[in-house]
Length: 264
Image 1 (tube, one colour):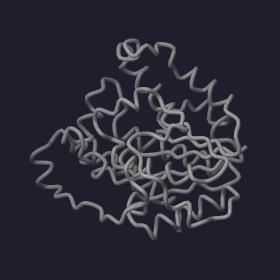
Image 2 (image 1 turned 180 degrees about the vertical axis):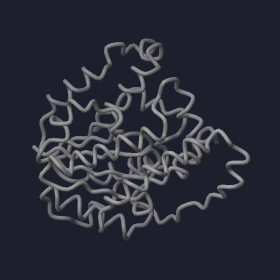
Image 3 (image 1 turned 30 degrees about the vertical axis):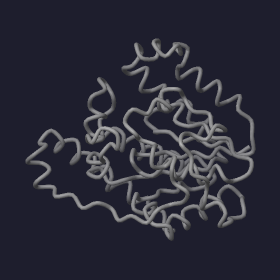
Image 4 (image 1 turned 30 degrees about the horizontal axis):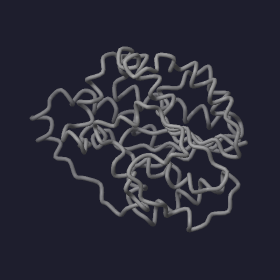
């Protein structure tokens, strides 16, 4: 069994990549299980109880993860949600680790489909949730961990790579090579759905997607060609001075991460 870990910074087309990898025979998708345990334990215990799932915790997710047996155990999660003492279990020596890294200013200004608000506002509305800088810093630390402890180098993917069918295909080819799977163009297309694939293991909290985070990926059938947005920094920071510090601190770490960017 091979652990295939998609580590994301939000709004990096990670759900589309998950849909792609789900087309590979032998995969089992565990979707944001650790991430939701992290969010719930940080802030949303009341919502967890109201959903009738008060037993959902980091420990229960880890136990389920370890009990899941398949050829390719695929998770899509934020690395900040993973406790470092469990890196040897999830980021083990034979694991494949993909880091999808979007520019901080694009992450923070990503517009939520259902509400029209910025992702930054949703992120900062959760009390005690890690700052943007910490999200990037934990990704950097995990990249260094993989580089030092795993047999395969981390696949560090700048966000724009997933915004083109041609470059996304090169990323998938590299992932297949690390998985030991022969790449097929069939992996680049999938069926449009109204919601999550019923074969995936998805927390109820992700299914209750009030922000519309996953809607576009559900309906998709392939990677799309879409240019990265251009953000007027001066205008943005005049309108939203509360973003300046988090974005600029995260950009320092982002620059360090890009030193590890994979050449596809």
